[in-house]
Amino acid sequence: MSFKNQPMTWHQSLLLYVITDPESSRGMSHVEVAKQALEGGATALQLRDKNLFTRQLVEKGLEIRKLTRHYGALFLVNDRVDVALAVEADGVHLGQEDMPLHVCRKLVGPRFIIGISARTPEKAREAELGGADYLGSGAVYRTSTKENASSPMGPQGLAEICDSVNLPVVGIGGIGLEKAEEVMKAGAAGVAVISAVVAAQDPAGACRQFRQKLDKYQ
Image (cartoon, rainbow, N blue to C red; front, side, top):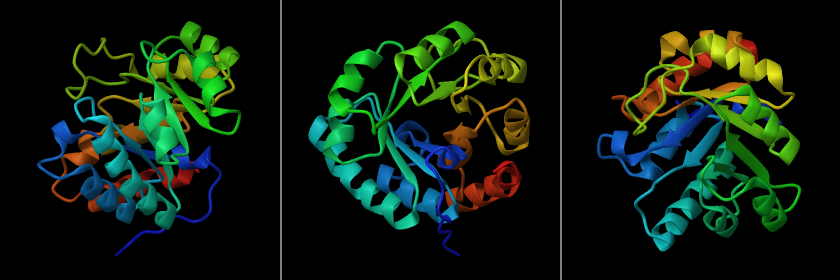
């Protein structure tokens, strides 16, 4: 059964945020992962690939853009502001080593969504003051999908970040189905997942299970 999201604000669309990491996807392409995740109820998709050339990212991004519009989901691109603009994504997600937030805002304008990775309350407040729209914070739990990941902050560390800002915060890092509610109870606006969906035998089914857990927090 295909899942089509009811109309949501972009804040609400952070609820189930799936990142299309090819290294975890069991051979599926970005577009295949996106389609299955959206069919299962993903409310946001992030295109992330550190190895593709710009043309390849744009081609994949254009396909995912069509899918996210059809399913009523948010679409963001990791790191690449140029690609996000080229494919008419809703926004971009930037790490601490990516394009500075104030420079990005000048390029994209006020209505483009900018997410910032923030691991500490200090970085979270800095991003808020700089004009970020939402934060991605983690790793909440131990994860194998990011090289050189810092030690897990745990739900308490996530709660400290959520309490330090007025921005929506998405928890990321090692979040399986059994941990999703713990993340939401810490004050998060949503969960960002990679392997729990992308590496699943049935990504659409995995998303449906997450939605069953998460919808009560909407």
